[in-house]
Amino acid sequence: MSTVRWDPLGDFVTLREAMNNLLEESSARPRGNGGAAASGLAVDVRELPDRYVITASVPGVDPDDVEISILGEALEIRGQRRETTDVDGDGGTWLVRERRFGAFARTVALPGLIRTEGAEADFQHGVLSVVLPKAERATIRTIPVRRGGAPSSDAIEVAARTPRPRDSGEPIQGNA
Image 1 (cartoon, rainbow, N blue to C red):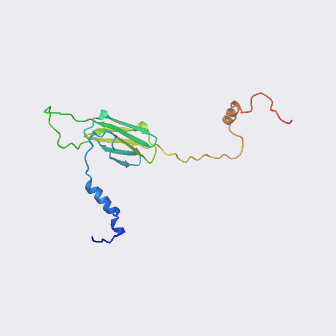
Image 2: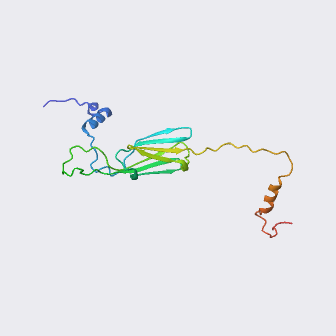
Image 3: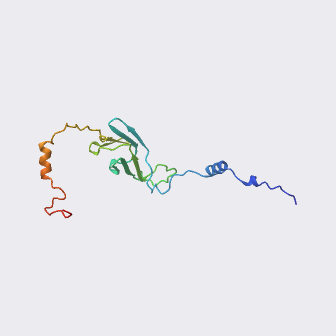
């Protein structure tokens, strides 16, 4: 029987070695369930002085399968990639099938408010372009100050027509 010297630090594996082993042993395969969970959508977002321009590549998607909604400062793009069927009808077996299908969604938070009235979306050659006009920002408004004197006759007329909260017609209770 031989004796072996025990080295307590020799049994520990560094984090780097553990990550290397994990990455070497794993394999990246396309999802077999066809992307049942909503997958992400890569987008490009540009800010111009008067609008935001969002571009997304969605090849093979029918424009009717894309839904765009705006809420406050957020844009949401949702859609569905349909599964391709056996077009030839030859009953062949897939050897490689990497193109994803199923639902996709992406929400983009923009740095400012959006004016929904002028929003446009265009779908051409598998590229979705959304143009969102910026809402006008609150601006500082100066109010001129008049020099002394009575308020204008318009202000007096409005004040006469506006009932005061205590003006119920009943006498006010209290010490007289």
